[in-house]
Image (cartoon, rainbow, N blue to C red; front, side, top):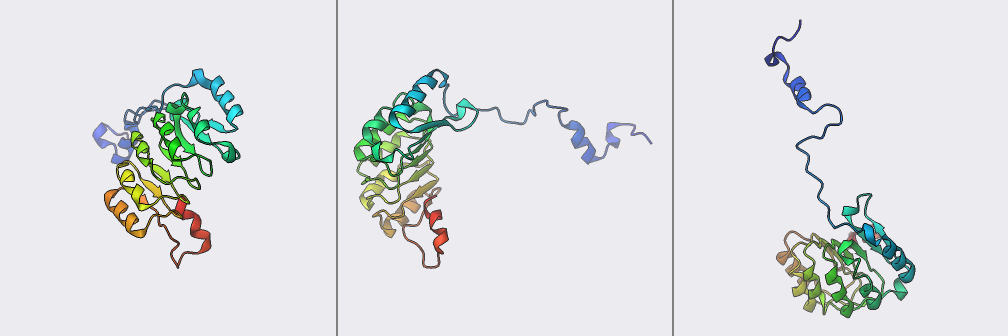
Length: 212
């Protein structure tokens, strides 16, 4: 028997009928919002920087608006403050900077102020003491910060409490104390602050989770 009116349609079928047909966009989907501006005109400069500095500067995805990632693996011993400063023109498009093991120092952090859309920052295994961590307050989008195996102490922690957008912070292997970590967890309630020591019950295979 044919369904005579829309009221005769079962609820589950009515939901299917209400969905847009074919590939028509769903009006409930959020419009794409670029994370950075258009860097198409800088492709030549990006290639030259990669060659000069020995680093990789690669797109996060096929969407240019998702930004760039800076990779220094393989160039750590020759990448320091001066090299970081040379990236100033590309800085507004970098959303992730992997500077682990490089020769970047406290003095070099001022160059990161130009990375206005930076979200993830790796500074583990560097000589940082934390004296200039206040420079990072210029990065409102920073959500991830890795400072493992640095010379950071509790004296640098007040600067970290100003980074209210942080969601993950790692300090394993630094000189920060447990009291300092506890204060950070209170000041940054929405941030996951990693442990600074290996719990006795931790298996060796789980050590990597303390800094990821």
